[in-house]
Image 1 (spheres, protein in one colour):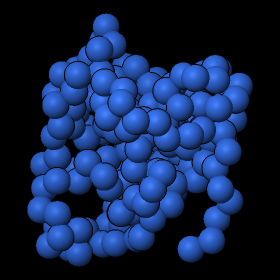
Image 2 (cartoon, helix red, strand yellow):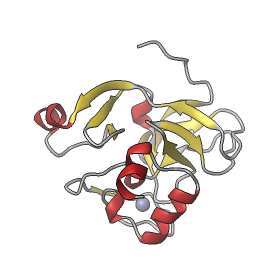
Image 3 (cartoon, helix red, strand yellow):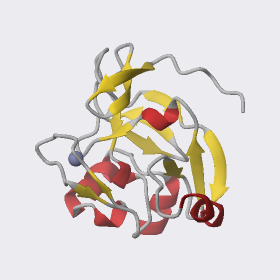
Length: 160
Ligand SMILES: [Zn+2]
Protein backbone atom coordinates (compact mmCIF):
# COMPACT_ATOMS: atom_id res chain seq x y z
CA UNK A 1 0.00 0.00 0.00
CA UNK A 2 1.33 3.41 -0.94
CA UNK A 3 1.25 6.11 1.67
CA UNK A 4 3.11 9.23 2.63
CA UNK A 5 6.37 8.53 4.41
CA UNK A 6 6.01 9.87 7.92
CA UNK A 7 8.40 12.73 8.54
CA UNK A 8 7.25 13.89 11.92
CA UNK A 9 8.95 11.06 13.80
CA UNK A 10 11.76 8.54 13.48
CA UNK A 11 12.36 5.11 15.02
CA UNK A 12 15.22 4.78 17.47
CA UNK A 13 16.71 1.77 19.25
CA UNK A 14 17.84 1.30 22.78
CA UNK A 15 15.25 3.11 24.83
CA UNK A 16 13.97 1.45 28.01
CA UNK A 17 11.19 -0.13 25.94
CA UNK A 18 13.34 -1.20 22.98
CA UNK A 19 12.42 0.61 19.81
CA UNK A 20 10.44 3.79 20.03
CA UNK A 21 9.06 6.57 17.83
CA UNK A 22 10.65 9.91 18.56
CA UNK A 23 9.33 13.25 17.33
CA UNK A 24 11.65 14.95 14.84
CA UNK A 25 9.91 18.32 14.91
CA UNK A 26 7.57 20.40 17.01
CA UNK A 27 4.09 18.97 16.88
CA UNK A 28 1.27 21.18 18.10
CA UNK A 29 -1.75 19.97 20.07
CA UNK A 30 -4.31 18.41 17.75
CA UNK A 31 -1.87 17.99 14.86
CA UNK A 32 -2.07 14.76 12.87
CA UNK A 33 1.11 12.71 13.23
CA UNK A 34 0.30 9.91 10.79
CA UNK A 35 -2.31 7.41 9.73
CA UNK A 36 -1.55 3.91 10.97
CA UNK A 37 -0.82 1.44 8.19
CA UNK A 38 -0.67 -2.31 7.79
CA UNK A 39 -2.64 -5.28 6.58
CA UNK A 40 -6.31 -5.37 7.57
CA UNK A 41 -7.42 -8.67 9.08
CA UNK A 42 -10.59 -9.92 10.73
CA UNK A 43 -10.89 -11.08 14.31
CA UNK A 44 -11.04 -14.71 13.14
CA UNK A 45 -7.88 -14.43 11.04
CA UNK A 46 -6.21 -12.60 13.87
CA UNK A 47 -6.97 -15.21 16.54
CA UNK A 48 -5.83 -18.07 14.28
CA UNK A 49 -2.55 -16.30 13.71
CA UNK A 50 -1.83 -14.68 17.06
CA UNK A 51 -4.06 -16.27 19.69
CA UNK A 52 -4.24 -13.73 22.44
CA UNK A 53 -1.06 -11.85 21.62
CA UNK A 54 -2.24 -8.71 19.91
CA UNK A 55 0.30 -6.19 21.16
CA UNK A 56 1.30 -5.34 17.57
CA UNK A 57 -2.25 -5.13 16.33
CA UNK A 58 -4.45 -2.12 16.16
CA UNK A 59 -8.19 -2.56 16.33
CA UNK A 60 -9.93 -0.14 13.97
CA UNK A 61 -13.48 -1.54 13.97
CA UNK A 62 -15.56 -4.09 15.90
CA UNK A 63 -14.27 -6.97 13.76
CA UNK A 64 -11.35 -5.36 11.96
CA UNK A 65 -7.72 -5.09 12.99
CA UNK A 66 -4.56 -3.79 11.35
CA UNK A 67 -1.47 -5.94 11.55
CA UNK A 68 0.79 -2.93 11.85
CA UNK A 69 3.75 -2.56 9.53
CA UNK A 70 6.94 -0.69 10.30
CA UNK A 71 7.36 1.97 11.55
CA UNK A 72 3.83 2.01 12.96
CA UNK A 73 4.38 -0.99 15.23
CA UNK A 74 6.97 0.99 17.18
CA UNK A 75 4.61 3.42 18.90
CA UNK A 76 4.82 2.32 22.51
CA UNK A 77 2.09 2.38 25.10
CA UNK A 78 2.02 4.88 27.95
CA UNK A 79 -0.56 5.33 30.69
CA UNK A 80 0.09 9.08 30.27
CA UNK A 81 0.31 9.35 26.47
CA UNK A 82 0.99 12.45 24.37
CA UNK A 83 -0.89 11.11 21.33
CA UNK A 84 -4.33 9.66 20.69
CA UNK A 85 -6.13 7.80 17.95
CA UNK A 86 -9.31 8.74 16.11
CA UNK A 87 -11.37 7.75 13.04
CA UNK A 88 -9.89 4.46 11.80
CA UNK A 89 -6.37 4.84 13.12
CA UNK A 90 -5.40 8.48 12.69
CA UNK A 91 -2.72 9.36 15.24
CA UNK A 92 -2.71 12.93 16.54
CA UNK A 93 -1.10 14.94 19.32
CA UNK A 94 -3.03 15.20 22.61
CA UNK A 95 -0.68 18.00 23.64
CA UNK A 96 2.32 19.81 22.20
CA UNK A 97 5.21 17.40 21.56
CA UNK A 98 8.82 18.57 21.36
CA UNK A 99 11.50 17.20 19.04
CA UNK A 100 13.26 14.30 20.79
CA UNK A 101 10.22 13.34 22.83
CA UNK A 102 8.89 9.83 22.47
CA UNK A 103 5.40 9.66 20.94
CA UNK A 104 3.17 7.30 22.93
CA UNK A 105 -0.42 6.08 22.86
CA UNK A 106 -2.61 4.53 25.55
CA UNK A 107 -3.33 1.12 24.03
CA UNK A 108 -6.38 0.84 26.29
CA UNK A 109 -7.92 3.78 24.45
CA UNK A 110 -7.92 1.84 21.17
CA UNK A 111 -8.88 -1.76 22.01
CA UNK A 112 -12.19 -3.44 22.65
CA UNK A 113 -11.15 -6.93 23.72
CA UNK A 114 -11.87 -8.11 27.23
CA UNK A 115 -9.37 -10.96 26.90
CA UNK A 116 -6.43 -8.74 26.14
CA UNK A 117 -4.03 -7.70 28.89
CA UNK A 118 -0.50 -6.36 28.92
CA UNK A 119 1.76 -5.52 31.84
CA UNK A 120 3.03 -1.93 31.80
CA UNK A 121 6.20 -0.35 33.10
CA UNK A 122 5.73 3.03 31.45
CA UNK A 123 6.88 4.75 34.62
CA UNK A 124 4.24 7.46 34.63
CA UNK A 125 2.91 8.36 38.11
CA UNK A 126 -0.54 7.08 37.14
CA UNK A 127 0.73 3.84 35.57
CA UNK A 128 -2.00 1.20 35.74
CA UNK A 129 0.63 -1.66 35.80
CA UNK A 130 -1.74 -4.10 34.08
CA UNK A 131 -3.62 -2.67 31.15
CA UNK A 132 -6.65 -3.98 29.31
CA UNK A 133 -9.15 -2.74 26.77
CA UNK A 134 -11.28 0.41 26.75
CA UNK A 135 -13.76 -0.98 29.28
CA UNK A 136 -10.92 -1.55 31.76
CA UNK A 137 -10.05 2.17 31.83
CA UNK A 138 -11.05 4.25 34.85
CA UNK A 139 -14.14 6.29 33.97
CA UNK A 140 -12.27 9.62 34.17
CA UNK A 141 -9.71 8.36 31.63
CA UNK A 142 -12.47 7.26 29.27
CA UNK A 143 -13.98 10.73 29.59
CA UNK A 144 -10.59 12.39 29.07
CA UNK A 145 -10.04 10.59 25.76
CA UNK A 146 -13.60 11.24 24.64
CA UNK A 147 -13.34 14.96 25.38
CA UNK A 148 -10.04 15.12 23.49
CA UNK A 149 -11.62 13.42 20.48
CA UNK A 150 -9.18 10.56 20.99
CA UNK A 151 -11.50 7.62 20.44
CA UNK A 152 -11.87 5.80 17.18
CA UNK A 153 -15.23 5.86 15.39
CA UNK A 154 -16.09 2.28 16.31
CA UNK A 155 -15.63 2.92 20.07
CA UNK A 156 -17.76 6.05 19.88
CA UNK A 157 -20.44 4.02 18.13
CA UNK A 158 -20.26 1.21 20.69
CA UNK A 159 -20.16 3.24 23.90
CA UNK A 160 -21.67 6.69 23.24
ZN1 LIG B 1 1.82 2.40 32.49
